[in-house]
Amino acid sequence: MTNHQSPIIKLFLTDVDGCLTDGGMYYSASGEELKRFCVYDGMGMVCLQKAGIPCGILTSEQSPIVKARAEKLKLQFLYLGVGSKVNPDCLTKLQAAEEICSQLGITLDEVCYVGDDINDLNLLRAVGYPCCPPNARPEVIAVPGIKVLNTPGGQGAIREIADQLLDN
Image 1: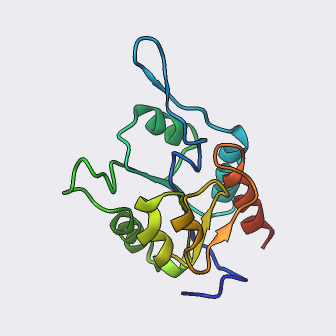
Image 2 (image 1 turned 180 degrees about the horizontal axis):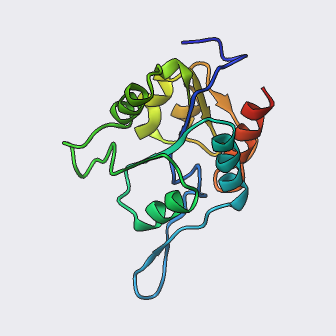
């Protein structure tokens, strides 16, 4: 892995549930799924993109809500259903990130990834700048070199790391 003190980030990727959201699943009386997103996180990703750092979402969910959020933020990359236990034939999150890196002509060492659960472990171990919110699973917090953010998922964690990356 690269030096985590001064990363050169050329791609920002994140998981959704527990990172862009608080990890809760909300359902209406009719069974419709709802998600709560923090506008600060969205602005963080917009600022990264304006600075020339492409952003993307990798999630095991097949959620039209996530698709709508990614479209609203004009994210360059959206991978739905990756790392899904339901569909073992789908790409893993690591394979999806490798595919994106290949398209951009960069390496995983130049990627910042924010994840919070066990299906993020392989990718977190492979990127140059792994991050997680403080409410991440203990297995994630134990990843060597991981930056544990101060802000919980769904409450501005993505904005926190975006601001730090932009300050560098």
